[in-house]
Length: 293
Image (cartoon, rainbow, N blue to C red):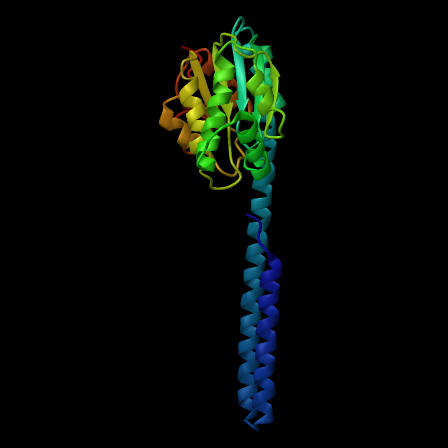
């Protein structure tokens, strides 16, 4: 916490002005000079008190700044240590595992998530990015409904239908024509192979504000994907609106800090089948899985 001295200086000036005005009024009304002297004495005492308080605040501010600098150094060292030890801890852990990534949130796919999976030996068979800003665009909704010939009563049903279509193409062998149709809009980006056996799926969410979209897009998708051996619901530590509490309703492993080395370690061990709620937020039960077991 850094103290704002501008506020205290403004307060001091306001006090001086008020006292000066009081002296002026008292003099104008012809009061005894003793009244003016009394006001001046009060002004002097008040000024000394304020100056003392400002000195105390400055000292406290300096102490807080010093503590903050120490914490920043400590955090930098810890992050560097985690980044250097992470490759050793995950190397070869996911060799032979086929993993699909589905992004449903507003924060995209962090390159570090892909890198840690590759370092662990996993094969990322597909990356599916649902762009919520575009998915909620009326023009894209109308286009998809027309192309897919969906008879849908409202947008909530549309989001669920969209999620299930993505899920079917992830798991069911086919020509992928419906997925290609969806990808003709800006609402969906796809890369990789679809309809192949999977060992795990990572769903990465996180919103910008309070929204029901997670209930009609993410949760139906997760329910559909539960035939895969491992389904993980994750997000980054800095998202404005966390989806973790919603993912936990489906009793899947959750990770709320995929942008941090600790979250990436949890991701690898989660795909190995270690269950739990990991991360740094209040919804987490542990920082990382018990990797020593």
